[in-house]
Length: 241
Length: 283
Image 1 (tube, rainbow over the protein chains, first blue to last red):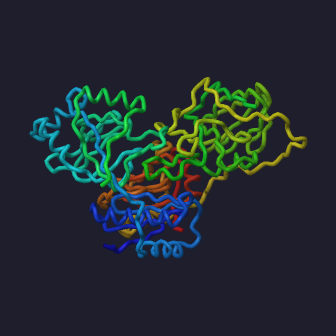
Image 2 (cartoon, rainbow over the protein chains, first blue to last red):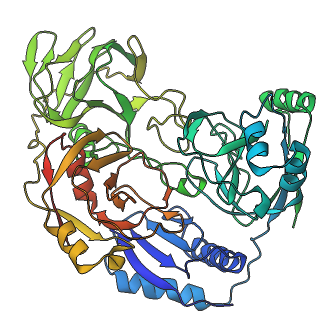
């Protein structure tokens, strides 16, 4: 399906393309196809396309002389039917240890939702979450699909330090902190993986359009996977969608 | 063929910066890079360096540096009295440095961010195509006392040492040039008038991520779906605060984007201090 898109100059070197303002998997798919077309059309080195829920920000290396010309060029890429061979999405299995010893907010979270910890685990691991985009922190992915029964408003006062690997819930969203950071979400589990490692060739393996499923692991498994990750011997499990 | 700069005193939040990271925002990685790209570019230009060679950036107080081998340096950006050993030296030109020379300075007299350029750039860790310091991307994010930074020494100086110099950083007394932000058109006529006719004050909340302005703008706009932002984006928070995003800003945000500074305006606002004034004019 094609949408009515808005094109705006964003800065000297950037143009913003906007879809209707909603969180929707069809919009995401359309936006990611368009993103791919733009990246193929331009050399990847001279343009960067930043995607989010309902927009693409196209950043050029040099100043845009004629913005209308550039917008026409971009529009022609949207209307073209493209062979999207390169757009293969994966389902990632992300191990999470949901224990009160590791996850500091799990007990309070369970109380405020009137759920048992087992119920929280089964609800949180049942969904296949869609990765919409990456932002906020390096390697932090915005996920769609959190079960309504797990929604809980953010903390009124954010914690000064949320540990790397914290699996947390804030409002209707869930995510994993890829590094230590201040944050206002409720930590319900810990993930032993490196979701962002600037020293690794594949430094951020999860991509927009992919899906994620959390799997519950024991504290022992958490430690075992942690040492594999530390030695660079852990390969995240995934399957083509 | 390698020389070392030893940090005798680190100054305030001194770091290594270059043009920044391009191509990694889609992974949530900030652009980073020199706060005032214009003064940074001058530092390299004076030395005939590549335009993305790494420099030392300092804030308010320059570091005290000892050079182990001969080289040529340049000093640009924020103004201070600089000394090589005890001899006063000028900014914005090429300066010959010999073995064991010590560069020091008085307190910064004007503006905020200064740059120490070095012939052929600094040799430091490159992470995701840039040497710019950023916590969690580079191992180090601020320079400490006794740190050592390597550079290419110069074995033989050219015979005629050129006296090329450039004018100092010139403060923009006029209005900062801006584009309409992505949500500008959602503002009321009154809000637009206030935004474009107020002489804003730089607050004391200033860092490499953002500059907060003191005056507020009545705000009734709803939050937006989290969307991309860039250095120079001015966000309007629910409480009416205006936040000018700077080089180390996050890649996405959920506050309405009311204005977008031009590159030149970003460099200019970067050099403003607390209580300085600024106003905006649409291109």
